[in-house]
Image 1 (spheres, helix red, strand yellow):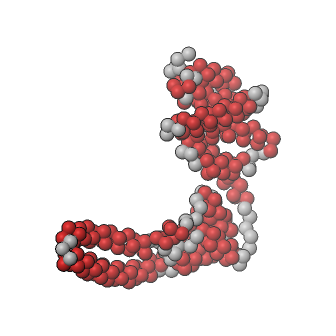
Image 2 (cartoon, one colour):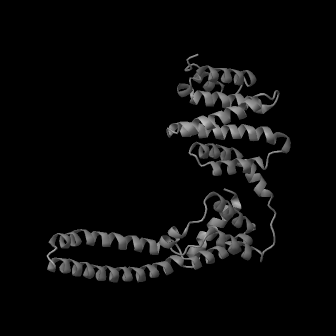
Image 3 (cartoon, helix red, strand yellow):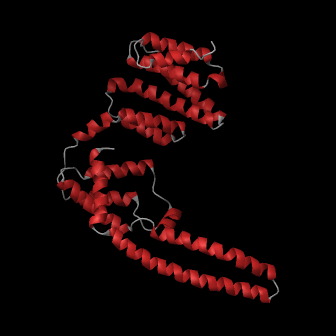
Length: 312
């Protein structure tokens, strides 16, 4: 996480404490619990009346069902309603905490606009809840509203230097790419691509095209392995073909670091599919070429160990 964004989150949570939001919320809880207790009492009377009415009509089975099943269902419904009513802070409390976070960040020397940027990433990676969730989980503000609140408050403070952000992006690139591969494996394609795009944005232009091809291959390869684990053979075959195409494109370019990465990725891909696709020999050939290009690679011993398990 980018350090100013983390500072903004901490400032936001501290604001909840300094503005006594938990105490105010506790009082709301107590008032809401009273309403729930009244609803439970009224509901119990209604169930009892319904059971008596059915019994007087001679519908003894229906009366028994209402008595035995109705009360637990009523209790469950009321508990769910109560949980929904008391989940999270209110829209006003969250807005107040966001405004205070902006002021705290500015006074600490951070750019409060980085908090809005973090909300944008949240919005891109996890869209706002729909009407159903909003109905159940109360008036917590949507992410888009929070961006608007933060940006409006941030206009009161001077713009800060964002050089640190570029340093952060460089330092977290490997973690972001590894995470993208897992997103591809689990089928979260849009999120996986957004992670890679974010890293590629800081890569110098001369290297970008080949690196993009490498990571397109990695993502499709991970997606093919994930699809295979979920018995989705059609998706596995489709992504496997695309991954191999990208790897072949990279390995065809001589005398560049990406060529070795392409052979390694191709070997890993064929190794993962060796039993389903009988690609033992293809995996071995790709691994051997990788070791020829990178004989002192840190993972050379691990690659050689894998090669001994291949039936080729």
